[in-house]
Length: 64
Image 1 (cartoon, helix red, strand yellow):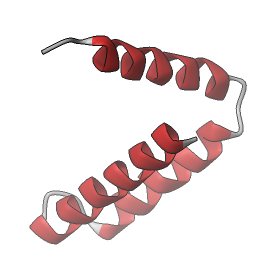
Image 2 (cartoon, rainbow, N blue to C red):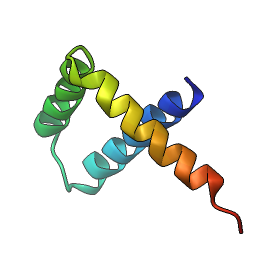
Image 3 (cartoon, rainbow, N blue to C red):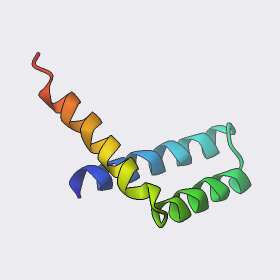
């Protein structure tokens, strides 16, 4: 839960920065948000979540 909330927050910040920087306009940003919203309700959501969890676990296991 904490990882998915962090990812949502990070992606939201990136989207706002892109909009303010002029790299993406409000229309495509709304489409991106709606795409993510509807993608979360599909059968792919579990696979995407497992993939992101495995990436987070891999990064977490790196010893410096």
